[in-house]
Amino acid sequence: MSGYIPYGRQDISEADIQSVIDVLHSDWLTQGPAVPRFEQTVADYCNAAHALAMNSATSALHAACLALGLGKGDILWTTPITFVASANCALYCGAAVDFVDIDPLTYNMSVAALERKLIEAEKLGKLPKIVIPVHFAGQSCEMKTIKALADRYGFKIIEDASHAIGGKYLGQPVGNCRYSDITIFSFHPVKIITTAEGGMALTNDAELAAKMALLRSHGITRDPTQMTHEADGAWYYQQITLGYNYRMTDMQAALGASQMHRLDGFVARRHEIAKRYDELLAGLPLTTPWQHPDTHSGLHLYPIRLKLDNIDTSHRAVFDHLRAQNIGANLHYIPVHLQPYYQAIGFTAGSHPEAERYYNEAISLPMYPGLGDAQQDRVIEALRVATSK
Ligand SMILES: *Cc1c(COP(=O)(O)O)cnc(C)c1O
Picture 1 (cartoon, rainbow, N blue to C red):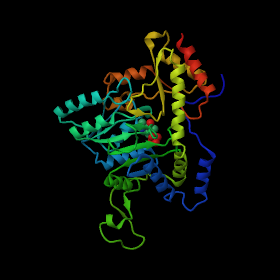
Picture 2: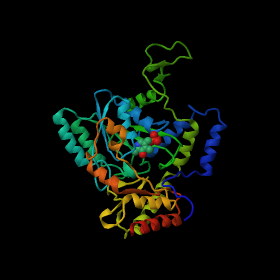
Picture 3: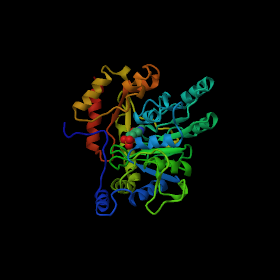
């Protein structure tokens, strides 16, 4: 046993470091030129018309919901197998949230379950205003089908692509918003590229982009065309809506822009690691991640599922064995509807059986560009020992 292997970690180059130092030597630590430069880089990469950097994906999800008009009396649906932020954004807006169970192969929101739930909701007059599909582990949801359902049932789509920058769907970059209103990325250090904390909202809709730009900076505008009357003078600005301070700093944006140069390399390296796991784990009593042929995953995570019927040990024991071997295995995610906060507002265990079954079997193995073969071999050996009991 030797050094600690986390489940994910950032990869910072000397060029990344220099890009941040350059900002520190410049006139602008925030609200300067690095932010729009980073936004343009990501928009160009994704082939989206507008990109708005924010201080987190959580903030970007909130601003996206508000820009789409989510409020009291509205309902938002997402998947239970996600980080809590994908659901919390509805509650920030005073809206209700509900969950659609996962597909047992991709672990993404099941489009069949979504359709069934929409048919029921239409009868009850309780259709969602927004659906947030989450591209779990970096693999895109079946967006074409979800978009067709949106057109049929009249809901808006926010793609939570926090795991998926650098991934593709039907050969096109995730983030192009071809099948959605808004796409969100996260740049937390465990994600594909990082700005320390940070997120981004992409859209092809100029009006939504303008709304999110206002919301991320106090609802304040300096654009005379948005003001209620002519400017009082050169100093003048107007607050025209209630916004927040959700801005990204120039230091973060410079780091993000520098990381973008290596995005394709990061994703390629993640695919090498996944391929090696796929091959070397093939004989063990577990399921490796399945890839839908329409997708090229960003591979933020590598979640395996234990075949508990084929082994004499428990999920918990396998997990504990990995941790005891100094391997930072993790579990993405505790189904959101099982969180105490969500149980307290009325959600119950048993309501999303595929998600709950997944939770009882899943382990996220270490997956990040800097994971070496020898470290990966340690993970595989620890799993082999733990599951041979
Ligand atoms: C990480 C993550 C978020 C939140 O991202 P932050 O940038 O940390 O706010 C939201 N949704 C999903 C699916 C995530 O993985």
